Image (tube, rainbow, N blue to C red; front, top):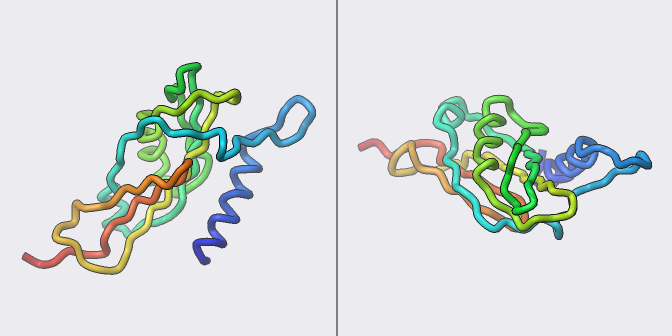
Length: 142
């Protein structure tokens, strides 16, 4: 499946999982309501690299009135990555919004190529709420 196809599927999954308001209509968290004030980078989990596990994890964060994350729940994604991803989101801070929620999408990807060691990964925050965590496929023998 292409990256665009995965993102379209992801958007549909998020829209279905956020919930409904009192009138039974979807009440989404819009991108323009999500403003990251601070975040903590997360490395690609070593066990996920070892097993070549890749995928998307969607996290719903519940915010307090100051924008601190008081709860984070993985809505979808590989089980092995879900807990680590939710824990990482708990360390973030957002500009407060009326819904007191934020959705963050993490993309875990292993790229073909060589790294100097197996511990390296790159964390990229693409605003407003999309993260790519990229690891290398292998290491250069020393």
